[in-house]
Length: 465
Image 1 (tube, rainbow, N blue to C red):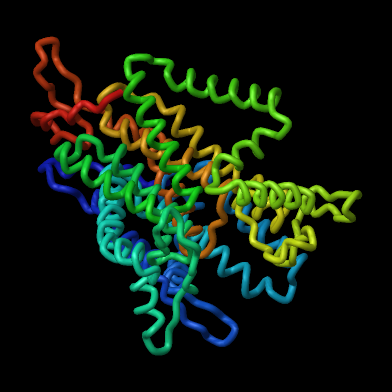
Image 2 (cartoon, rainbow, N blue to C red; image 1 turned 180 degrees about the vertical axis):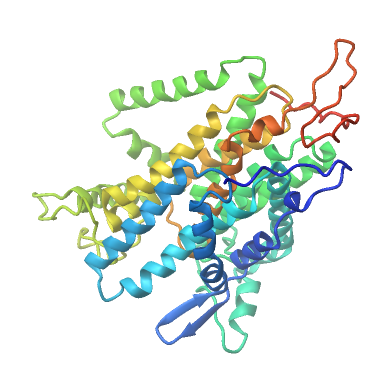
């Protein structure tokens, strides 16, 4: 039987179910402390070791409905994990035993930890606050790195005996500043992580702290995203600022989001008609720091697609169903680097179109369910839902311009799992504010925000619609 949604104990104190699980805190610490141990040919990070212990029993419990009803994304992500294993077994049989469990545990492990441990509004808010504190703790190290170019925490970890960490990335300066790698495998990953936290705090925690403090913290998180000097992260940040501005400017227009979607579709069609390039190529040309980078990414996209669907002109066989695995992809001779700055394209090239479709559908189904939730003005979860949708939209564009792997890959999937409680049957009804009598006096509520048979607590501050 699916586990019941957590409720108040009637005293105003948090119940055990409303506290953030220590496992979530430990998971997030492992994400930002990339300590690596080599055991022969096996590479184990602190995150992988944690997930190897908890993933399988939690996955079984998830599929049995012990964390609430299963949702389509659960099965789509499980299907992706099984498909990538089959693709690796077919393309790289000598590496499947080593590679499939490590990638699979980062993927499914991060997801099931979030599904199991974040199942209420209070837990989600607590997670947002922990993420905010993590980024704030990284601020002095990031500011130092903008001047020195040296990620101090990574160098400290690599200096410890018996362990190592991710490789240090020495990227070219941008805007006269060193790009901040912080504690991640690449500056792009630092920017993506901070962009997610920015949206969750600036939008999701609206009204839950003093306004001056909220604006200051949001500004710091935006600065941390900027310091990555990554076009993908800055694209997500710009998109989120745009969505926030749209929601404020047109807050009295009920159909504002339908108007925005219609405007986007119209612009897409207009670009397709008027430009001699496809909309995707036009988008990539404006989502980079230089014309050279835009041109390079357009070539990567063109040849990556040919590696999936095949090209008789260039002698490229089709790898539609199972991709090419970990093998080198076919590209022009002048492209010495095999780097592919597009997460969605990597999924298709590596695991075939079905592998891409399963993970993309899991992503799309979840954001669609969130967008279709009907929440009344002033609903306690309204701004949290909006923050999650903004983050999903930012991620979808960012992942089209960058590739993610290891810890940050797991974190992206973790975030998707952390939003699943919102689409559980009855979750939003449990969060509905207590009704009022005609005179405005709050009446007793039987939700978890008021003691049973008692006076309801003070209403939440009304958020801008």
